[in-house]
Image 1 (cartoon, rainbow, N blue to C red):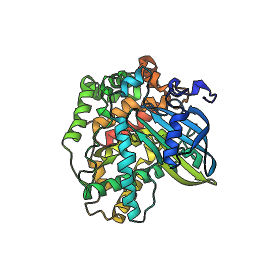
Image 2 (image 1 turned 45 degrees about the horizontal axis):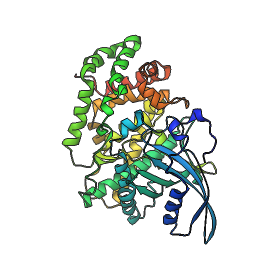
Image 3 (image 1 turned 90 degrees about the vertical axis):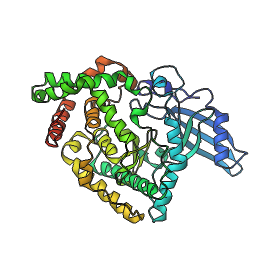
Image 4 (image 1 turned 60 degrees about the vertical axis):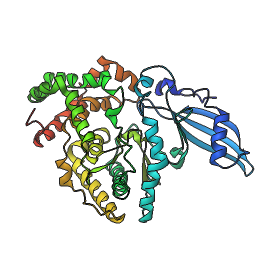
Amino acid sequence: MSESTDNIAYNDDELAPPEWLDSNFITGVLSNYEKAPELQVTDLSFSPACLKGEHYASIMFRAKVKYSTENGDFEKSLIIKTMPEEEGHKKDLIGSSPLFETEVGMYSKVLPEFERILRQAGDHTKLCADCIYHSLEPRKILIFEDLKESGYFVVRNREVSQEEVDRAFFKLAKWHAASLKVQEEQPHFLEEYTNGLFEMPQIMQEPFMKTGMPFFVDLLTQEPELNKYKSYFESIKPDFLERLTAEWKDLRDNPKVDQYRVLCHGDLHLRNIMFQYEEGTFKDCMLLDFQISHLFPLTTDLIYSIYMLMEPEQRGRFYEDFIYYYIFVLTNTLEEIGYKGEMPTVEGLYLNKHKYYEFFFLTTFLPLMWALRETSVDFGELLQDDERRRQCYFSKGYIKDVQRKLLTLDICGYFKDV
């Protein structure tokens, strides 16, 4: 049965689990995990695991389970992640993509190896939640221990602090370091992980992709303080997606195998991180959602996080501090785990510009992030409603954010050529 919920706050397809996700299924999962064939589920309830706008490429449930074994009675909270079954935009967008294959590989193969490398050096950093079950057939599904039960939470209704961003970069740096070590010792171990954001089969046909740059140029036209950038963006507007995909394809097909090519997380936004405090003191954060993790320049993870993780003030005034901290943790970890290659540097990061990729976030994803500050926003509806999306570009917060970011990009020479 399902717990009562405030339906407005949740995705419609997560208000009730699919029929196959029942007591018998959970009994099988737990009896195998607990190595207790006699296990019996005595009570089971489901509720949505996330609010609207916090994820899209799956459906997720929280299962509260009471069960008994020969050792007594127990309770457990589980997070269940599976594919959408209802016909509609979400299923069309991700149905033929390898998202679950990637994430199952990450939890079953890659992340255990990353943690082994860290443990071998005496580093006990935990890189992921405990996955207790995964399957690709007959259904694509992952089941995790519920981090909320250990005091982890998603930041909502407030800005993320500088310390929290620092700790997210701490985890990312550990992850990137381990991936460099793996490539050094096992060159073929990660080679199957090539499916990033733009490899999703339907992504380039999405309306939000096609309208991002035109809506942005409309903003530059109407805002006097931004007019000076209009001619540049207008000149790239007709073939912007072609420029973007060409830049991405070149990075994919002609990889520079060096100290900057790592297994990227690929989707490092605020809702894919949970934080943990103990008696008011920061304790840990955990990165989530590895569905588009892929080998690529680490600078793409950093660009993504600048727009999708940081607050506007952090993006404007403090992002260099975060980058220096990230490099500090990355190089220290590489030394500790015995990496023998050349070390990444801050100067090297700034040489790795991905101009159209950064323009994409500024013009297409960032206005959506401003809209999602309102927790009632339906992300799926926003992606499909051109007029609602266009209105996002004219919010005061987004306009101020754009003013600061365009000035920074101008100083960095992004507009010198077309």
